Amino acid sequence: MAPSYNWPPASLAKAINRHPVLRPLQKRRGILALVVLVLVMVALALGLGLGLGLKHHPGRYASAHCSDESGKYQLESIAAPVVGYGNPGPAANTWNLTVDDTISGYKQIIRGFGATVTDATVESFNNQTDSSLENLLNFLLTDTGANFSLMRHTIGASDLSPVTYTYDDNDGKPDEDLSAFSLGEYGTAMAKLLAQMKQIKPDMQIVGSSWSAPGWMKLNGDLADDSSHNYLNDGWFTSGGVGSTGYSSSFAQYFVKYIQAYQGLGAKIDAISIQNEPLNTQAGYPTMYVHANESAKLIGDHVGPALKSAGLNTTVWTFDDNTDNAYYPQTVLDYAEEFVSAVAWHCYASPADWTVLTDFHEQNPNTEQYMTECWTSASLNWTHAARFTMGPLQNWANGVTAWTLGADEGGGPHLGSGGCDSCDGLVTINKSSQYDFNIAYYMMAQFSKYIPPGARILQGNGSYTASNGNGIQSVASLNPDGSRTVVIENTFGHDVFVTVDFISGDTWSGDVPSSSVTTWVLPGQGLFPYSTEN
Image (cartoon, rainbow, N blue to C red; front, side, top):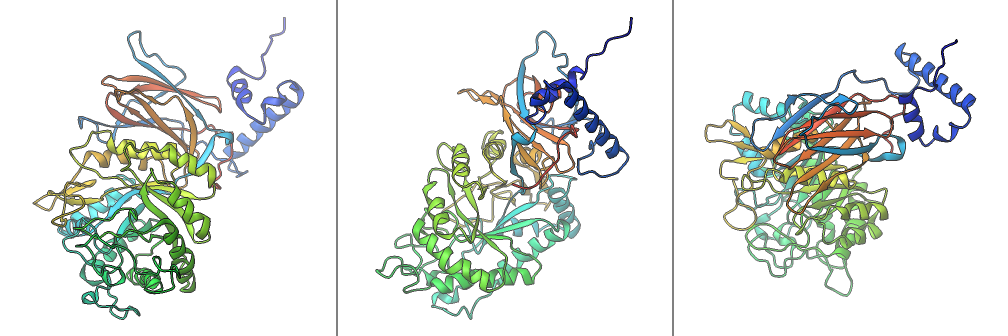
């Protein structure tokens, strides 16, 4: 008797059944056989290097990397997941996740991860020897370590500065034509450190955020000591509106001069935020209150046109504040969309609701979003940095930056009052001028090291955290080389055997250690073209 064959094989049939294009062809076996034959021929052609536009398998082997609460694992390689459902054992705790790595599951493109470079970062980093600093920057910016590729920095002083200043204080006297503009000691040191980082990571993106306009531009004439009438003197409170009186034009040119000065020192500025936390006004450190409609007019009528007139391709990220006020960035976009490329969010709403980003994306699908600030401290739960990275990624964020990149052992230098006096940063520079990576660094690196710029986040299901904090959260990406990354946070006090089913057809499973963030890097299926288009 002639042998019988089942075609297609079960594994391939599973992939075809889940594919939105191939599934309808199942009933037409002749066409299906032809499609399969074409796929096989394409795969062979790729193997011969004919370059038909599909990605090669980036490697045959999976790998797993882990950082945990105890410090036992710090970006350590652990047992890799296996193909299929594996053998969890009779007493194992199990969990199932699903990832749609087909075109129908494509979400946002990742632009990068990193942190905010403050004056505390600059001063503490510059206290190291040249060789030690070079080594630290390589760990931060290359795949030797975290592979960060997005840095936010403070324009002028913040709470993490030794003194209050801007780039045109002019002893508090009006300087409408900005003739006294100067980066000064602190601005120059900031620009030089960013330029050094760019030399190591040429494609690193830099976004600058201002804590306040110079004091003389404000209605109260004060940079940091007075929170009353803490507004830009731009005509907003007059019948004529923004630009009718005051310093709107000077305010716009202040950003132009800053960008040109930094660029002259080798630090190209890709984007700016005209005001950090515009709904916050406090004394003790630089702040400034800017209303939503006021910000829209400033960006749409003054800052945006000034950047364009100066021939700068720097874009504007709006808001730079918490998720409980989504009306603000929508107001700005409705008026100044031409100049606004992204919305920046912070984590300090209580609770931080990252689903706001998904709602915002549904209304503004062409506008990128970033989580640009969340503080890091040794006093916080080990999950803190993982949560402020995972949550935004699950909800359409294109990147994440922590507050702050680095500081000394006292969380500074910082101002004597106001703001944060216990923000340790991702790196602590100790008294002997050596550096230590804090747990927040390792938790962020579990994402940044293995989800490169250009990676596409994929739709996933199965994540859940109970009210007691225990659960599994995950996010997955399809990477430019065709590989796939799955980051899994396990907040249980025990190991969990996790199985991930991919819609493209394959399944992977493996052990995720207790109280950890574990990253799986998996070979790609190679059946679907990779695209970096939104």
